[in-house]
Image (cartoon, rainbow, N blue to C red):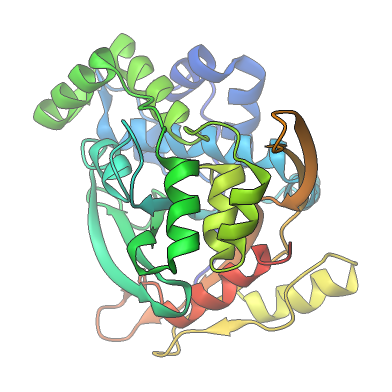
Length: 344
């Protein structure tokens, strides 16, 4: 099975500390770089910030953001830090709407325009018919094992019943675009050159982080209920937007870890998911609950408790056909993992 990596000290070496500090603050940057396993080539000094370094910076910032929103994940990571263990960040996941989204590009396209200039390419298509969704894996072309992947799923609104389609149009139809001309210009230059100046890299990173948020207005409670009745995943997007749905740690033995974490009182899903090829194994904490606002029929706002984001664990075996880690995903695994946000 795959082994966990070790963190390296990146403070003061290479552009990552300065870039992250400029965008998320020095303390949070230091925490991220001291927590995550970082490949040596990503920490090396470079004349300009490479697309690989910028991709890692984005992942580091999103990882810290998820810990801010998911106390159970923060508890686990704090325990690993105390034990002196680095977190091997395997992938992050987000959900999108394949339907009317106002000024925001629909579905995975809203993120392909960011991820592709950062060096990512679509590495797999995963139908999720039980969820009326499709997942896409974006894998980094330069360092596929060392830079976290993105698993981008999209809800096919047109396949939902009429009441849910209409509710989705009202919820997501007035979405705004978090990227402006400045961010688009910097991304185009990065796609062309493969590297960026510190100023352009910071512009890209700030814009990309804005994209991982809710872009639509506060949903009406009646619309949320109508969508929830036919797509719990769509209802999740209604409150959480395009935030990281989960972040995933790569571990040597997810089955043994799941048993240990359950014994420690962590809220895990009942069973470990195993891929059809027997090489990818996953489990997750149950989603933490969060309070979110809704619009009532009289125009007032009221908060309700809903499922938030969560933290996942994955073991990737070495593929005997290639001698490298199996970096694929599995539709059955994904469907099973998504269930941890389905409680209302």
